[in-house]
Amino acid sequence: MKANEVSRLTELPISTLRFYERKQLIPEQFISRDENNYRVYDEEVVKYLQDLRMLLTLGFTIQELILLINESSYTEKKALVKYKIEHIQELETKLEASKTFLKDVLKGKANFQTRCKSKHEK
Image (cartoon, rainbow, N blue to C red):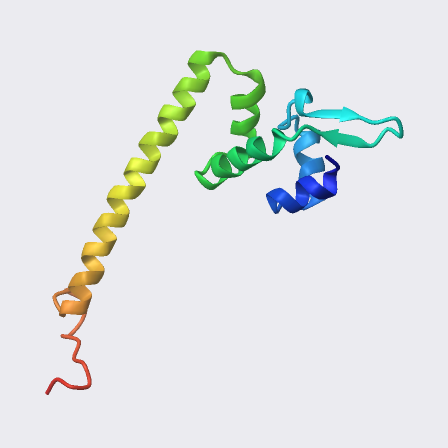
């Protein structure tokens, strides 16, 4: 499939596909050339790029992705993924505390405020 179709299916701009290629984030196995020297992407690249986007959403940097995909040993890759899992767990804890705090705000129990009253309360 051509770049414009991959772009449409993945909702990634063609410029992003080119950037990923330059950074070697798209393995060569997913890209070939046709008789006119246009890039032709394997259909599996769509799922691969969806996974790559998920990793970015999870907080992996481009440099970490390069390490994860190309350069690291299995032990290094495993350590990086474990670190991200721990980071996500820390974020979950902070989000849960934030949610509890906001519920207290709604109940008027937060230390910084006076009690919230709705229009119907007197």
